[in-house]
Image 1 (cartoon, rainbow, N blue to C red):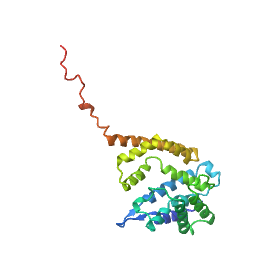
Image 2 (cartoon, rainbow, N blue to C red):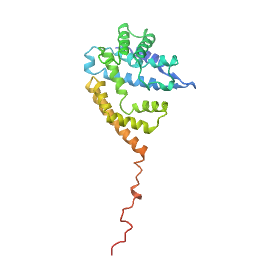
Image 3 (cartoon, helix red, strand yellow):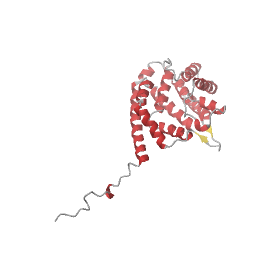
Image 4 (spheres, rainbow, N blue to C red):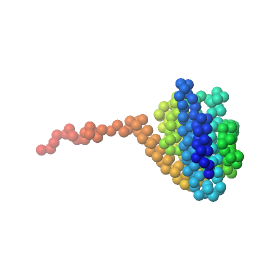
Length: 240
């Protein structure tokens, strides 16, 4: 287990790398907050007995989770994408390689050699279906979990704004995915650990309720005023 000082140094280095400066000199923390969530989730998943039985390296898990999407920083610095496009599209295998390079460059002097090797391997193989790395499996679970539930709506909205889409388009996309059982396939294929899959199922149920309420408000079907609705026979003469 790493010391508190070592852990803080990793977090501080990652924050310096992953917080993006805006055109106004402010901080865009969209990528950083995602990285924080994945890291915290990964460290919790690492406590599962099945993970600990595989002799996982928590230092490597932390590092890989924080830097798993650092390929966006490379693309931004190269001028290949705009700041607002961060996280709205999948990264390529080449981008994951670049993320591993950033991790190695930034944390090379902070991590033990074995932890560094495990972390970079986890980042490189993050989307491989047959990955052997237990650290990669843990980070992949945490990253996939972040794509489900209420939190995922923020990325969906961000993508919609870039594409000039409105609320109706977001709802329609959600409806189509539900009809084609996209979410069922995601649950089946994205989670190796039953305990994490159960959490993903609960998050998806919460997300569905949110989307149904969003659709209701978009269509105005919640605009019912019972106290102002008169029964059909209210105006009929009263029998005497």
